[in-house]
Length: 226
Ligand SMILES: NC(=O)c1ccc[n+]([C@@H]2O[C@H](COP(=O)([O-])OP(=O)(O)OC[C@H]3O[C@@H](n4cnc5c(N)ncnc54)[C@H](O)[C@@H]3O)[C@@H](O)[C@H]2O)c1
Image 1 (cartoon, helix red, strand yellow):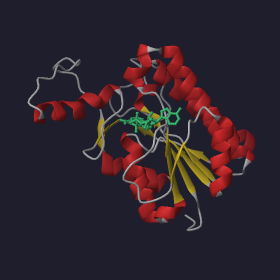
Image 2 (cartoon, helix red, strand yellow):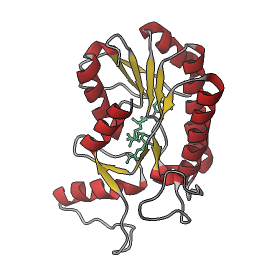
Image 3 (cartoon, rainbow, N blue to C red):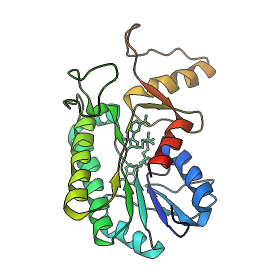
């Protein structure tokens, strides 16, 4: 880690982005972490920008303006939302990643972070102690975009030497921010409904369980990986 690194977070207003931004600002200093999203971000103690990751020239402008050395690309259409309009989810998830990879390569960025997901696994994968090199036949367009994204990240590393790092998160559980359309979001939503004394119908059958990770552990793991 270099103290003069300048970090761009894309999707900083999301469930993970909001918490990761604060954690990165503690490590690098608030002014070294540029938080960006589609909409204006509130309650920030460091620089922010409104950027659409699909707008390559705008993204490049921000990278140049702030002298960015690392990008955390968190923006994505998540699994449940993606199934409502698969083509849109594919387009947003892939095009935003291509923009990030190309700009990072062209501007010689030192590192890129692109989170993947357990959505890369389908019904064929081992359900317990799932190995790293498992057969990947995803069930959702979101999962397909993450498998493709992992492969593109690997391609940019092997072909261009771009240091792209990734981790397959399970469902992330945290109290600091609201989830944004993932399959495992029920685990957080259910508490918010309970607090509001509203009934909650979960789409899982009683004996089904999905893997989860507590937000602080996800953030710690991400910082350690990077
Ligand atoms: N939360 C989880 O449980 C989980 C699990 C596995 C992987 N992930 C991955 O982690 C990353 C962050 O997830 P999250 O839960 O914080 O998602 P989220 O939906 O809460 O946040 C995503 C953010 O990206 C922004 N965004 C969307 N399209 C954009 C665009 N075109 N340009 C700029 N910003 C855009 C949204 O406004 C939002 O603030 C995603 O890549 C997701 O696939 C999350």
